[in-house]
Length: 547
Image (cartoon, rainbow, N blue to C red):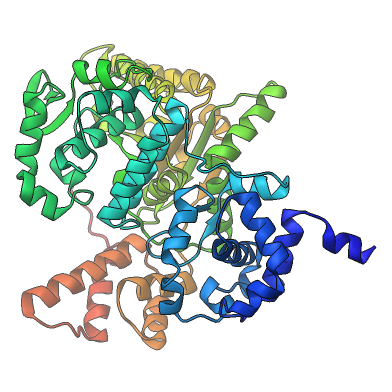
């Protein structure tokens, strides 16, 4: 029976046996002799080299090991980083063909792609590249991924060009690829690469304002020097009719460009490009513009925050929505973040959006107000109309953020005395109705005054998370994340002052300004105490204003 299992031609068992033998092997010749049958089977089944078969097995071990027992490929194979680097071309080839995902530029961990895991699980074969003959949306998503990897430093320039060339070679039937080659363009040309970048942003983000700065981390400095500065490159693309200056309030905005209708017809005929409503009442914050920031919470808030992250990941969100539809529940999602100012309510929204790949449609309440009767109500309706349009034209639903929404979430006025009171109630009624019809959308509101929340409004929020002042232990982590303090100093400040994360950041900024102005990097603990006292003005005796 055992012999029968050993001889079973199964990828999972073959990989498992190679994993067992490969540990500490340094990839020496003896490994390839001892496990020749299994290595050859993996190699033929997945259409990879024998060395790649062993490397893939080691990556599988890393991927499936628990965190406390996880080892890098180099550690598992007992290779120095430079010895592993000798096999970098093999690893990159596995990535190029879609078997593994390229690691984050700040990580040395690799992941097996979902498609490769499926092939291993089902004992299937692997075609030469999983990125061949892609459908239009999948093709554009792959191109977007490559641009993102280049932008974040995950790919060097020549490697990026190689990946893009491979993608185009593997998809000769793509209308975009056909048009690109019909126009005698080359990916290695910086101006053509900029056009591709603009086409990608047009399809993926509906972007109508693309700047030179957006592209500067993707471009190669030597190529730019050879072909001219970015301004000259875009000028050439404008002369050829592929790009034009952005339009802002009916006027040309020379700080950015957008794809012309001609370019859309020639290159993007396979893509559904609806005319987008330029956000008028709110600000659209693109996911790619959100910066990473470490957040620290008490255990309860951290648990709720992590649950939201999982819920709003595109795959899980879609899965939950399907279940809700089956139960005839509303599929829209509304969440309230409430608590004192400076407790990371808004920043939490930004990080959730960044980590789940969502844009943010941010609404500032004062912008909705109008002195004209009925205009404020129209503005509120326009917000939801614009947001629904954004949802319809996005791969994943953006987040509708009502920031500092105290003014529109409060208890409705019972004794209406004039047009202003009537308008306030009308605005709240509109929001209540729109929250009912949110469908597949996501709304997050932040407020400092949850005690004034209207009861009908409160019922509309599925999740309500209280962001309180952080505990001394959490404050200590925040202090040390912003200022290089030893444990003792950080503990003293945390126990002595009950500050929010925003207030601690203010102290850190004061410290930085002081060091720049006076050239003194070593700000004393006494000075930090002085800054902290300045953040506690609410605890001092309050002087009444007026008579």
